[in-house]
Amino acid sequence: MLRARRRTWRTKGTGARRRTLVAVVAALVVLVPIAWMWTDSLVPSTYSVEEMGTPDVGGGPVGMDHAGHAGMPMGPSVDQLREPPGPADVDLTLVARAGRVTLPSGRVVDGFTLNGTTPGPEIRAVQGQMVAVRLVNENVAEGVTLHWHGYDVPAGDDGVAGVTQDAVGVGGSFVYRFRADQAGTFWYHSHQVADPQVKGGLFGALVVTPRAGLGDTADLTALTHLYAGRRTVNGLEGDVPAVGAPGQRVRVRVVNTDNGPVQVWVGGAPYRLVAIDGDDVDGPTPSTDSLSVTAGGRADLEIDLPADGAGVRVELGGASAVTYGRPLPPTPRPAAELDPLHYGTPAALPFDPAAADRTFDYVIGRRLGFLDGTPGLWWTVNGHLWPDVPMYVVREGDVVRMHIDNASGELHPMHLHGHHAVVLARDGVPSTGSPWWTDSIDVQDGHTVDIAFVADNPGLWMDHCHNLAHPGEGLVAHLMYEGVTTPYRVGGDPHNTPE
Ligand code: C2O
Ligand code: CU
Image 1 (cartoon, protein in one colour):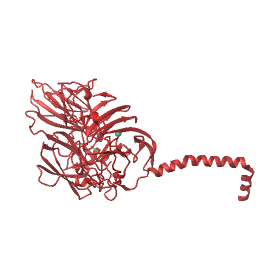
Image 2 (tube, protein in one colour):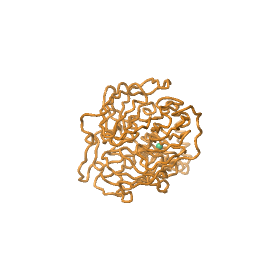
Image 3 (cartoon, protein in one colour):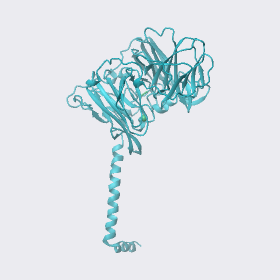
Image 4 (cartoon, protein in one colour):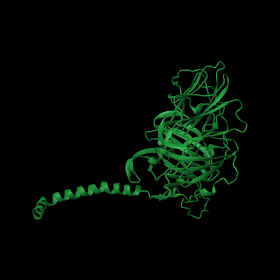
């Protein structure tokens, strides 16, 4: 048989042999690069984000390589960038638990609670107070952390598993401490396997009221979340009646804990957008427009309730509403949308963005490739697939500009940890309204946003998409203060999985 086959082969002659060879070479030309790309995409089971990506100094002074060579003095470890221990004014313990959860609405879902509830307890502090939160993990097998979204805490308290701490395992605990210097609306959530844990309810509101208080204003947090696809406000569904006397001024702090934007509008009275992402808006004027609240973002609305007790509805996504006064039927979403780029009155910035020390590009794209060996259509940053993303390097005191460009086919709510940035322009159109400070900003597909900030909080900070399904698909980079190190590693024993 064998001989016969050989003979057949021989009879094919050199032409056939050459064709076979060409086919093999062609296959190799295709397969070898794919194999190389596959191998190249593999990420070790444990690694330090310090070693991740390509340092990008944004046109500023060089002097480090991110492995700490080149004679640069080593900076502090994130562990040293913490609030020293001491007494706290707001001191509480949050116990994380996984399992079947009964929402305040009565609906039962699979998820997570903090002290038996989801959303977790609202943390309230007065500006200037010291806050200490002990996180205890009762039974969450994957581990947990708490990240203080929008709060510019010391780096060591940022709560990112594998970057600023190890995930807190079952039976373990971690104490977060920070001074409540920023008044405004914020939230906290797990930053360990963040997408499922946040979807499942491991979060709560953080509200810091100004030293001077809020006077007679009725203050309400309206934290909205989709539990198993159901729109809720503070865990409740449908209309949620709130306390407010006729003629009283109310402040509604909308917190969007979802992966996508939520449309908010007010029926029955105009509102003023008094704060975005915890920062006051200058000269807010009455509006009846719809407002898009970014995933992870916050919007504080102030409303003067009608003196005659007529109804007011703060509509959240059209499925839920916070209601005041006499019953009012649901109101349709206004066609016009409030644009913070041109809302309120301009004011001087505390720094000059035109004199930036560093300018970075954060260009978001999408392409076929391998992500840690898995083929797929992945997000790219500046043309590269994770982990070949930029490591944005700054020095304390730098004025930093960042040009975010989204050409990826989808909306991305971009979130930089530890800093508040001011929006300079969208699609090259400069901001003409109040300084628009933000920590979570929607960058629509096909659009650009220019932001600027002062590097005033040394650390190693995530800069990622807050559609929490996306960081795990490659949409994550870091901002590193020159020389800052971390003793923590992604993966490893604590199974640190920040995404
Ligand atoms: Cu609210 Cu890194 O996230
Ligand atoms: Cu995204």
